[in-house]
Length: 154
Image (cartoon, rainbow, N blue to C red):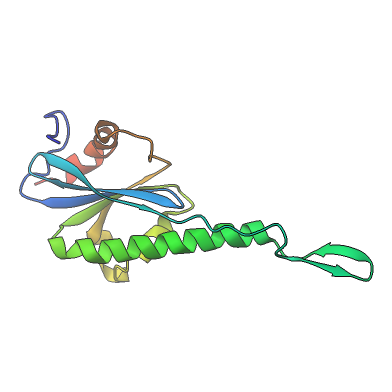
């Protein structure tokens, strides 16, 4: 889509906007007044029956462990692995930097999943907005990051 003139235009640069939740992400490519969604990533739901984590003993039915917490963590781990693989595939496109939008509790894990060297993170991840922005439109995303990008331009 063509970026409205009221938003940052990404002139003579290529950027990725990664909008992440804890188990789903959208990735946009921006360059020279254009913004396009190029990827969607989601963890597959891990299903377990009600019987896992239970056993019958001499005194009756017992449940063990925190199965739902384990499933949720596995789904998040699968999602982060998929996100890292997708970024590895996309980074060969010569993108100059990333604008990352993710929940506060997920920002560190998302950055780690991208496999960016510690010394390169500040240069590669130019903007970080904390929150859940997956339901935002492209225009709303641009409205959020434009103020952060304008001072960096030039």
